Image 1: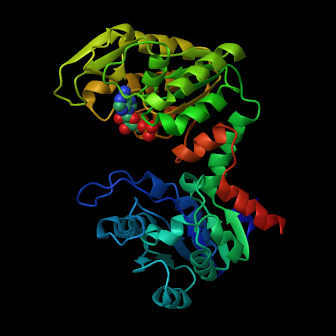
Image 2: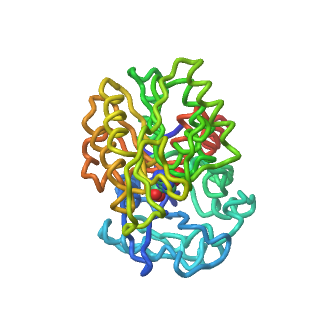
Image 3: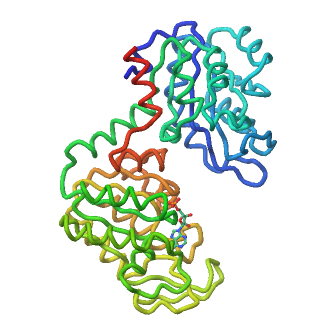
Length: 396
Ligand code: AMP
């Protein structure tokens, strides 16, 4: 694998893939620009080398159609402000106009191509689309860790069509931190998994059981497990078709000696609303029409205790609907507990990063990943297609 600083970029056209999928509010104002800031070391290095920097990214899910609200325009403007130099945004990411724009680039210039996902060919990993993207550049740099678990034209297909390929500083940093966890992590090794998407995470969770010493399951995820253990979970989110898989997960933990911790109490309400009446109940006493929306105080104490001797902690997904104040306490308490531990701590995914920032603990977590899906893929022992594609180009 080549790193950006091992490649000669001087006056070359360098196509850089970033994950600028930033959260926008209704007025298309960037709510959180950390993904743009995380790309600065790579862009600044390319500029220091007097390269012609061509930036590509996706934003949201336009499903192959032009959607004005998902234009990269606010991203280009924010990047321009952060770099202190002009960033030209092209009208499209492929086509004659783009080629002309690139042909006329001077060294030290930055061009951003419009949202890749305005073309369905991007997510289909279409070969002709990848070839066109590749034809713009002498060097391709992938720094989009958040997209690395996907097989798309701009991160997999394109690598066949650029002479020299490598990864940027963010990708390097992400991979290095996950390597620390994957290769002989300091023990006890504890995984904390929360959030809502059971179907996305269940298999990961089961695979993780082969490597961790303790596993904490919170958030919406926990209710499918509680249901599998025979508890009534009211209207809490439960993926019925996954109850049996959750049950085998519990069995597997038991057989492999992994200590599994589930909530013992929770904050319930009739709906996820700040004004809703809330109650704290043991998990055995969830009212039939109410739903569990946060872990309760006894669970916070239990989970904090579980972390006390941990030497490695990975955390993916919040403990409750932390976006609503009334259901945020569990997630923030976990952020404090993880931050106060003496472990190597790696967090990310399902807006866990946002929760950590809101809890004021971002400086006390060893590493906050920019990729939820990609980090889960690595943690479950899988390979990232984007990295595999780059490795192939280096073998040839
Ligand atoms: P994920 O992307 O799967 O990590 O899910 C993150 C989302 O899970 C957050 O937006 C939370 O609001 C949501 N979440 C966490 N706990 C619960 C819960 N008990 N019920 C419903 N949603 C939840």
